[in-house]
Image (cartoon, rainbow, N blue to C red; front, side, top):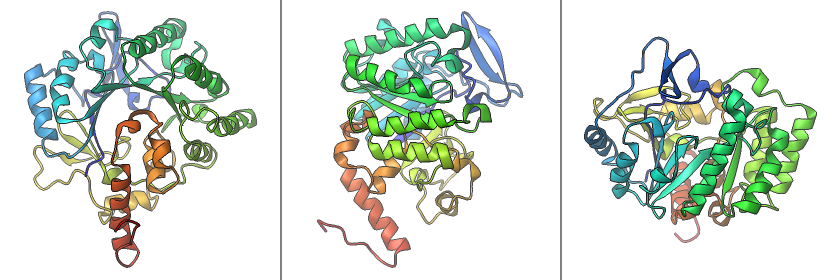
Length: 368
């Protein structure tokens, strides 16, 4: 089973210039109306600009063989893609749940009214509740866009949508993270906020002082006091370790998450840091989620890629679950995962696969 289908649509199309964003390297900025839009300097990735029917047809073909409960759609900023909500509604018929990643600056009641909160959820990118917390994200417009995004969160919740928040922690906002989490707990019950460090970016965004590390310790301790707002304690502990020493947990994500762009270019890693391995439309025999026997997967499990040590995201909650460090109860408190009924079956399937191939035969699990 593919745990999640992750489709990235026009990743170069965004109205923000987050200073820690590794996707924005070597890009130019063009203006479309009031929006600043990034483009690669070498012109290597032109926008698809496909009509909605063609985009739906291509994505239908791309997702036609996927056995997954969840579809995640992200960009760039999806709300800049023409008719993207119509595309999302059409694709939703294949899945039990569709999650949309957005920075929240371009979505209002008109857009929310087009989506069914029983099917759609949101992943909202926001680095705190103050302008200073969001200075690396919003720049000179930090005060305005922080208010706008918090208003978007309020609108989403009022309309009945479930929301999880992505929060990139840096030396700029780490000490303001817990007040942000407490604000969410008091005002938006059930919204989970996932903190994770900036990836593949300048040292200035990853140099944490003793004071900053003390704030990380406070996050770990607070995780048991705010279980419906913060991720499980095991996640917060792994985050602290990743900031101090680099990521230390094994990553199984390529074996159960299919990640591609809208043109069918398949990524080995759903976090997008190891490059493309082929095209699902044109490369016959391409396996979307390779097994643990695949040498590319083994390279990740054996830490042969330096980038993997620098990569820790909300997806690592899944790795911790498969490692037995996060329980089913904790998973069902955490963002989009609370809707998925088959965690245990997927985890046991992973144990059997890994056990049979790497531990000298099949592993017996309770219930066999």
